[in-house]
Amino acid sequence: MNTNSFGTRVVKALSVAVVALVFFISSPLTSLANGDNNKKSGLTDGQVSVTYVGVDNNSVVFRVEFENPTAEKFWLIIKNDAGDVIYRKQFSDAHFARSVFFQKEEADIHPTFVIRNGENEIARQFAVTRTITENTVVTKL
Image 1 (cartoon, helix red, strand yellow):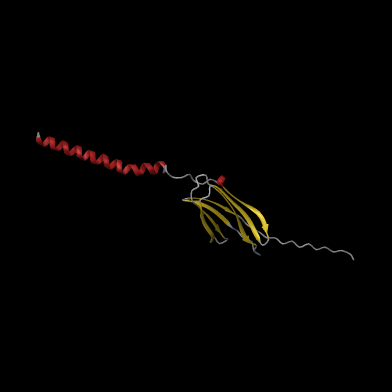
Image 2 (image 1 turned 30 degrees about the vertical axis):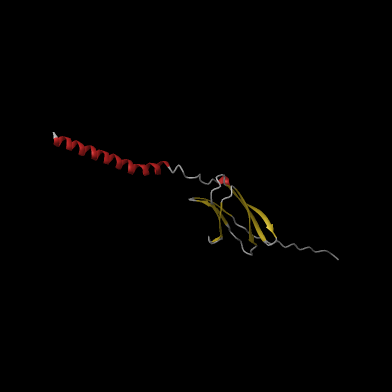
């Protein structure tokens, strides 16, 4: 009877260890399958607005706006034609609005505006083409 009791204890101990191991392994997998409930909301297209304002002296002006109701940190990144980062700054404004000035160029420019928070990002691309029109007026004297 003593051996049977010892065998029962070993089986119970192994069962408890296996159940604990299953809970330990499945807990992270369950959180990955359900998503991270503590993760802040992602970006949506409606939160980001980039508009061409016009020309001011020697600059082309854009207005960047971002509705950030959670006031979490985000990056405003501006890239040039080659995809090189020409501006990068972090903000945490709930109602972000900034004017961005580009110096007028003889050639076309293609700026890309990126709003990024964590793994999420929204990008807006533009092509700025400058056309010079010459008017000739002839009057009889």
